[in-house]
Image 1 (cartoon, one colour):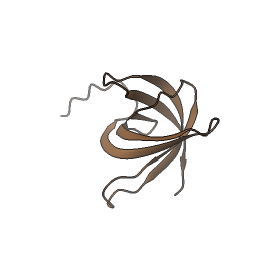
Image 2 (cartoon, one colour; image 1 turned 180 degrees about the vertical axis):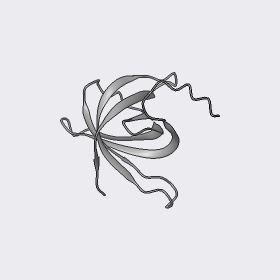
Image 3 (cartoon, helix red, strand yellow; image 1 turned 30 degrees about the vertical axis):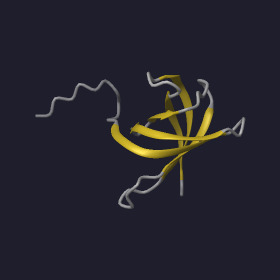
Image 4 (cartoon, helix red, strand yellow; image 1 turned 30 degrees about the horizontal axis):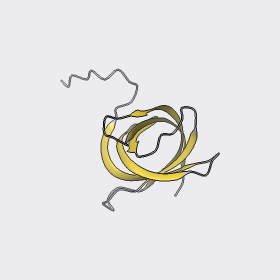
Length: 100
């Protein structure tokens, strides 16, 4: 029997893939690294803070062609320094998954 202590509704998959983002309202763009992904959310690191409540389009393109690219619109739920100077941890709720 697997002991599953996760308190969330969906399991998070660990990821280490390049991520590109576009902030709709300001037009700000940037890149980072996807840390984990679930059916309802995403966590990534980037060198730019993104305010809570901001709607952002993201693209995750895995390095291996076995996994398809992933495009989604998210709402930022948390944005904080991640302990590495000049790097931020961004947690987002997936609002919609876009067809590639």
